[in-house]
Length: 305
Image (cartoon, rainbow, N blue to C red; front, side, top):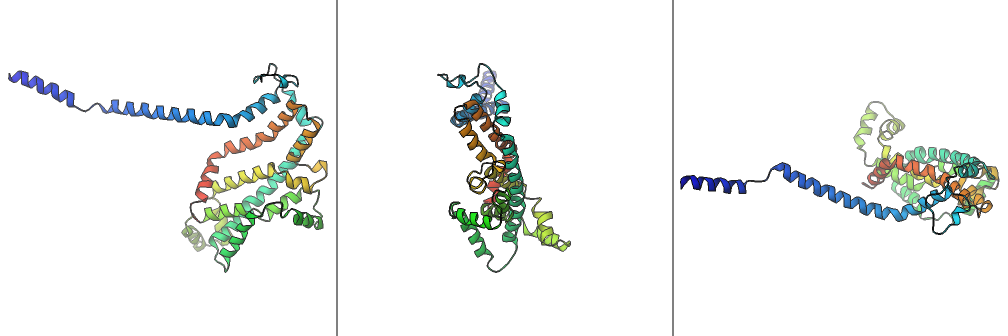
């Protein structure tokens, strides 16, 4: 009887023994993989409606003129025509020249939006002066003014300065820290940096600009990338201001040039879509290459204020 009791006790202990940890981890891993798979399926399904216009534009840009009108839509062209891009870029209208003008405006505006607005944001964040907060509120209040309100005064100002029909009329406002939103982003981000770092730099002999250049600016990669992306998008796609301030065709930027291109090629949808893809491609490349810094900059800039 004692041997039977011993066997029963061993069997009972084996049944009550905890399962191996490896089996538990494997089930947990499978559940996590399943959860991630369901999440990705939902995200892909939600992204498809937004990708549909882009896929349609890319497909149409590679078709012949007759194949565009086929019903139902043929998503994969029977014959891929890469010449549509060459014709759109160097054909009836100098689209490449419009892109060059736009690049000049974008690069010139980046200097103002990134460096000058960073200086102003640094002053609002770290310098102590009477009326500083009131002045900052006034700067923020300019964000509530629609662009149409200042359109006529700005046009008159540039006419007196003899800057009409010049790319400087599009660059100069940004060089004078005209972006209140960018100033706000820089000020919010600089307030998250420990001020003791600046105090230590001052003890080592740095002045105000030295603290900004050697301490604050190197630590501001996320917000610098965020401002650069916003500035690039706004100036690359800017349509209203170039349309009002510039009349000469050789000074047209890409947005105005695309509208002119649309008027010249209304029924030539492959060329029109090819020109649109060319205009959109730099924005896509910039966003996906700097997406991590963009999201981080937006999140961190709103931490303190």
